[in-house]
Length: 311
Image 1 (cartoon, rainbow, N blue to C red):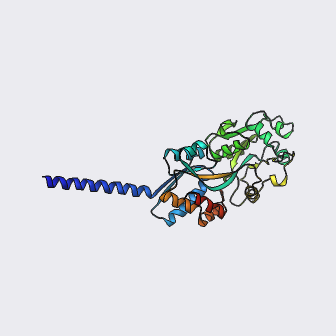
Image 2 (cartoon, helix red, strand yellow):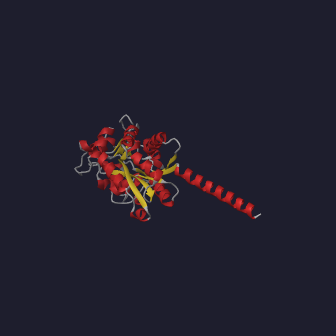
Image 3 (cartoon, one colour):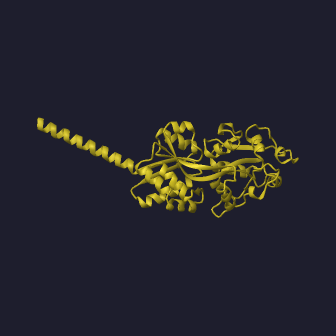
């Protein structure tokens, strides 16, 4: 009887071990990612490229805004959070390691049917004027901005979801997302479609949603020039009619609402998660970024510096 009990105990122990080992192994072969709309197209392509080299790996990627990516990563609901804004000190205190992987920018947009479009494109809109639109609410009509006499109100749109685009746009005025005025609209696609349909509307969008892969601005909207030097006119280097012109301004740092994109990981990246990040920052990963065209890759030297920082 005692012999049989020992055998039974050994079998149970063996099965328990096999189950635990199998579960751990399965977890190691799965990566879960959530977060920023801006990063979503690129990370999807990275996932596909990584899976080709690692056929047994499963990668689940979902968009939902940078705020969701950050909170999911902190709560351990995902392995990686896509966050298209600077990390908050409180997030870093909770053990988040923010890995810089991409960069891009946020642009103010209006309908191509805006009643003062000509004036906007000629004069641009200064930082103070954007503050009057989005922060103080002092600018209530398009005449307040363009100096015209149309009597048309400004319909201000902002993001309803916690996101990098809103955080970056607010930071441009020295504020936070919760300080932005306007009707809340969910997601980049939502803002873009809303502004397209509303000739009196103004919104802001990520680089990846403004330009087509062929280099043109998407139909129905135009980028409003930011009068960065406050000289009362839109200079040639402040007007972006093509993707290439925008890229030049992002890369030379002259565009005022450029930003960094991060992968958030709870603690230092390990095992499969680390392999994925290394792939994203490899030459092959950078080539994928360029092919997708939604964001801009980091220079090789900067990628190497990032990788050395997570060793």
